[in-house]
Length: 74
Image (cartoon, rainbow, N blue to C red):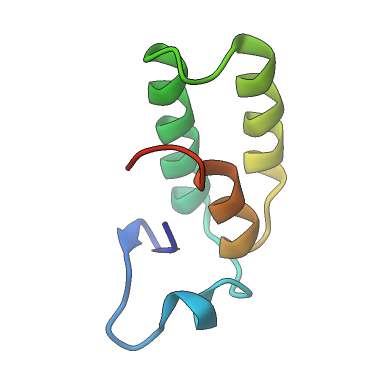
C-alpha cells in the first residue's frame, strides 16, 4: 500500500525504502477511507474499525500505515 502523499508507489522509492518515511495527513486519510470501506463491506467489525482508525491517526510512517490494511483487498 505504500503511499507517497496520496499516490501509490514511486519510481524513485521502492516500498521497502518508503516504510520508514514519515506519512502525511493525506496518507492517513486514504488509509482511514480504505478501512471505512472495508467495514462497510463487512470485512471489519465496529470495534476493530475503531481500533485501526485510532492507530491510523497515530501513525507516523508509511510502514505503520501499511500494516493496518495489509489483510484487506485493495
